[in-house]
Image (tube, rainbow, N blue to C red):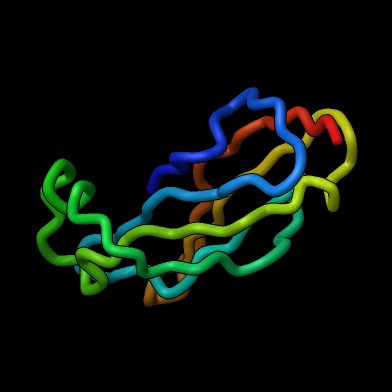
Length: 109
């Protein structure tokens, strides 16, 4: 998986895009969740077409391909001012959970 936005160290305010892609060859991804400061906050929309990822990563057997993208509009006013961490929890189709892509954000609302 990969988080395209935001990048580590971003200074953010207002509503920002949380987006990227995830896959699991042979098994597939069941769900993705946004983790903020160590707590699961919400499920993010998964299933956006990402043929660029399929091509570059040579994805052959993920049952979701090419729908590997995710996105979520995050209202940073719901976060503490100052430093916050975000991650992605990837749950595959056999129920395994993997945390991925920890980022630190500096919230300035």
